[in-house]
Image (cartoon, rainbow, N blue to C red):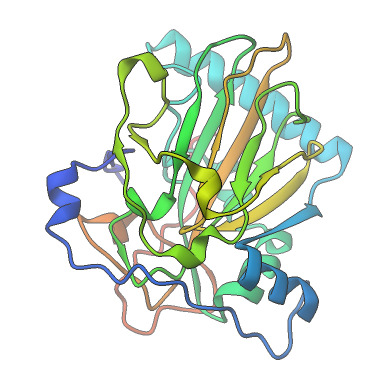
Length: 277
């Protein structure tokens, strides 16, 4: 079956035409599978929780080798290290990661019994590539409502203070939808929005992870990353999930995979594993 091409960044006029509920909904899970109640409370308060070791050294090495080959093919076809998006709709191994029960166990403790995986995007900062990800909220880019969604950030390479780690503004998800401006060309932003003066919304936390570990953050949490100024690559796979009762506009419900439970309304697609490797 042919796979639709989805925009990484929707047109702003399209997003502005959608009435969205961008309020944080605290997670309530009486019987969590993986998280403790303290970790759930931390996520509700701070907007993120980490780290969780998902893949063994051998497993993440196999994922890294796979990604190296995929990246080489994409670059040969004219893409770059940031252009591999909606990868779970195209590549079986990425679908496997999106649906991995070890990841989904953590996600469902925060989003509930019915969960849809709908996004997968490699953010690969090559050594000294000069590109940053300006401070932003994921919810500004996603045509979803209500705001019951999160990102799992899987470290494919080790990430520390030297190679452009993601940074959070702790607690900023309680500030609602924040005002942003269009990014300037001089910012060399991978995306196209910039939120000024992030420190006014909370303290900066650097997200250092070992390869094979994940962090999770709310779609309303303010975050970004500086350019990688080191000689080491910094690659991550971002996996996007939502509660199945979230409504997706602009056809984005077509990106769905039911990773836990079901979608009683049938709003979301439920893509089978792609045959392509």
